[in-house]
Amino acid sequence: MAMEYPLSKRLAAEFLGTFWLVFGGCGTAVLAAKFVKGGVNTGLGVGFLGVAFAFGLTVLTGAYAFGTVSGGHFNPAVTLGLVTARRFGWQDGRFATADVLGYLVTQVVAGLVAGATVLGVAKSIAGGYDVQVNGLAANGYGSHSPGHYGLAGCLLIEVVLTGFFVLVILGAADVRMPAGFAPIAIGLSLTLIHLISIPVTNTSVNPARSTGVAFYAGNGAPGQLWLFWVAPILGGVLAGGAHHYLLGQPADAPVSSPAG
Image 1 (cartoon, helix red, strand yellow):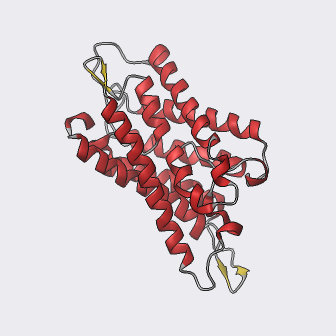
Image 2 (cartoon, helix red, strand yellow; image 1 turned 90 degrees about the horizontal axis):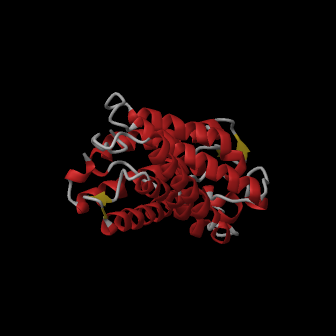
């Protein structure tokens, strides 16, 4: 159970897991989605499918590696969704402010460190890396959406997909489910989410992931960052509330962490 560990160790685990998610997912998008050599696209890049699997694999492996310590949130929207579902941040009926704020701050800092690391690797390529042209896997809407989807559509898809992501986490990690399999369901759901929405927003469903690259990318990404905080958090909170009200476990059942 994650709450058995002191807060300092749980925050260290959240830092490592969030770093791994942002570095692995955004790193794949920046460094491996296309493989250009001598100005020619070789066709050896992993494309949208590879990026989707990269994000899914990072959360799957991160949950197994660090989830037993911190619960494996790696995402402010997940943390706040679990708070709303009363599966995290409550101790003896009281709100654990230090735990929740600690998780949120740690996730954002880890995302920024991961984004800087991706940028550092990208800039080492011969001829340099043009962030303004390539975007550093930043999220966006309108002209900054990969498929030029509008604000309303981007807002809607981020709310819906984050909500279902949190519902999968809550369901898969329920104590009534087989132990040890939750990270698989969570990783596959994040893969599916990216398969749906990379062309729409470049897929956020995670404010730490969006913040981690937005300020390095520039070119309008920081100005659009608000959507990738508001929409995922709204989706996560709605899902947490719905699960607690409609699908929550019995009052006398023990509480499981997201990693099982």
